[in-house]
Amino acid sequence: MRGAVLHAPGDVRIEQLDDPTIVEPTDAVIRMSATCVCGSDLWPYRGINEVTEPTPIGHEYCGVVEEVGSEVTRVRPGQFVIGSFIASDNTCPHCQAGYQTQCRHRVPMTGCQAELLRVPLADGTLVATSDQPDPELLPSLLTLSDVMGTGWFAAVAAGVRPGMTVAVVGDGAVGLLGILSAAQMGAERIIAMIRHEPRQALAKEFGATDIVAERGDEGVARIKDLTDGVGADAVLECVGTDDAMHQAIRSTRAGGGVGFVGVPHGVAITGRDLFSTMVRLHGGPAPVRRFLPDLIDQTLRGEIEPGRVFDLTLPLDQVAEGYSAMDERRAIKAFLQP
Ligand SMILES: [Zn+2]
Image (cartoon, rainbow, N blue to C red; front, side, top):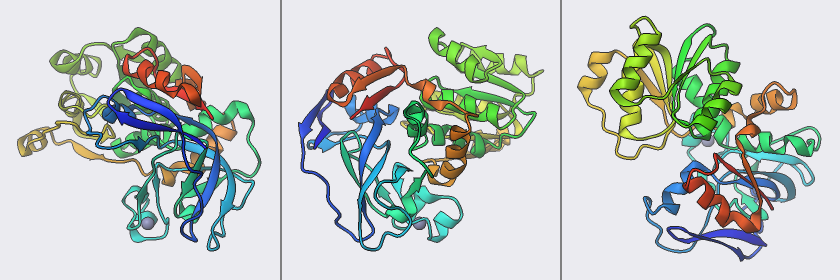
């Protein structure tokens, strides 16, 4: 099969690789219907996370089951399936509590930017649709594997409820889908902290009611201005930098919540930051498996169209262009057709 391999910073190539096979009796092999490039793939691509050897890359996937191991009972060949970027058994205490990304048997997925994929713990990881989906729905269904589920978790973790004022820090695909999630959960006012104009337009289409282009102290002051000096009820932190996290905490009202889903790079929070603001923090790698059945239903019913974050579609063979377009911020997110 063909698959993307990261060799060194800035060097991702499509290569001929061995077809994956069933290794454990709990595995499935799927044929990819669509895959994509994630903002977090850019960390190793930019050399911020070290690349020590050629590594198959990509962790967002949906496709059709080709083969299952002898112990797999919940999915069968021919079904269209979506799974999380972390494989999980969906039965251990963490999974039962809805924290499948902390599963006792968790397996981080990689090598998804390819034609075929081995999925461990298939019964726990994969969710099948009842029919083959309309090809037009593929981009939206693919986002449920990570980016949309992550934006949704940011809103859940921040405690978004109907009628709330919500602020969203971050103009990447996760931040934009955090806006969509907050709108879907009934937020009355959604303040998007976005500087980039084309992304402001999509933020508004997803439900943002106000745009704040300022950052840091000025950004916090603007949020306070817009909320009678109080701060937002819930804030979604979708970047992962120290500035973004502090901007989120300081924009939240006392007793409000911050949902943080940006992978932290250099974030430092002191006890005093927490003590003085009285803000609740919750976040981490989104347990998208918890939300998959509901988000699949919402997508198939046409209530949400998260696939609109894809503004670049490429054949898998041009994966390198997908990375460079996202790296240079020429594209929000690249959709890849195997
Ligand atoms: Zn588990």
